[in-house]
Image (cartoon, rainbow, N blue to C red; front, side, top):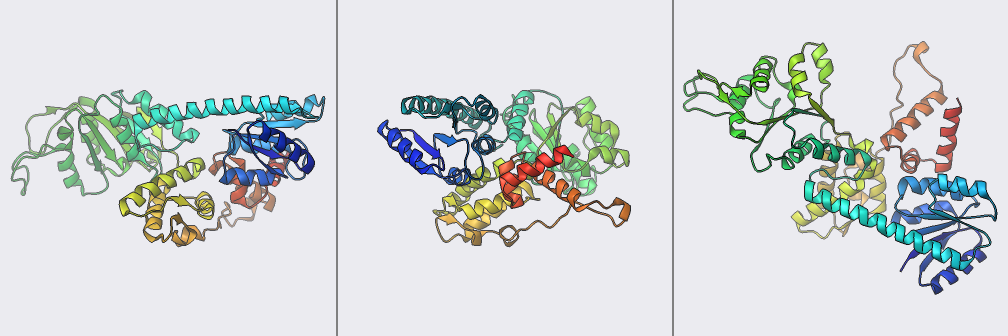
Length: 451
């Protein structure tokens, strides 16, 4: 049974179409404007949207544009005036699946809805198969369906079996080790050890011993020999986290290991060959560190053979709610609680917050929320205060020199474009974060383009 949402400010026409479509076995719901339709599509699911072209508020073309960004899985059929070729072309360019001229013939509309519903079912099947494949390949490691995460997963598959060193960059908490583990899990080395070490977590002498190993008697407390992590990896993957914090004194020794594929433990007289894949990660700008002589250029080039950048969570807004729901299920199961959904108010706050701590911060937020939740639905009161009450205050301007200051209009332009970029180009999300109507956002963007 196909669920159809009718969007038209003509009440009589809507009632007529609803009656006719129900007789054909469809389930229908109607609303009077595009804004109401967008609200319904946030909380409910429809197989097809049928919309008039001209209405109060957002037009049918603007509705198509919004749905092409926020609900591209839902096909839209636009009702146009008879012979209005230009309007039909504009609707198709805005993302409409089909258009029908008025006066509407129920049989023609019914067949168009059936085609659109089949199109959606096929699209959903493709997504399901892709998701199943991603689940088989990645499990719960690299979660998200945004273009950035899809590209990241594609890169992981392409380079998983490569022997080249990989440098993973990204902000703290964005999931760099998760990506490293996914690389290992999808490589031919997957059944061999994955050995990780944080290069900033221990003093230089201890880090050297942990990495390279030591012979018995190499130093005062060396009562027995220690193989070191490079040797312990035994054909697997070595993950060097926070490589940008590795002491300068150890960098030449690591470079030699990368070049020669052999290691000499402290106090030993001979080198031992090793067979490992090197993956490093950093949240620092290593190019700047090289320029400042805080990181060796030759080591940087050895590590940076293949570079992968993990995008911050604020740049993939579309992944926030799926990740939150995943963490909700995970922590609710662990805690033995029946918390199963996130309230619309919580979803709104999660989307508006910039997540400086990225995925790790979101994970901690949901874990705390589940621990505090008293009902089956996660509410605003269960969130951390700074997220529940978050309001943006940065103006994206700096300096006190009058010659460097800009007009208020320029501040607005920079901020709107900044929010749009953080929202991954999704104008619906950007408008919600900015607290303005989508129509207002479109008008401002058009004004910026004319400047």
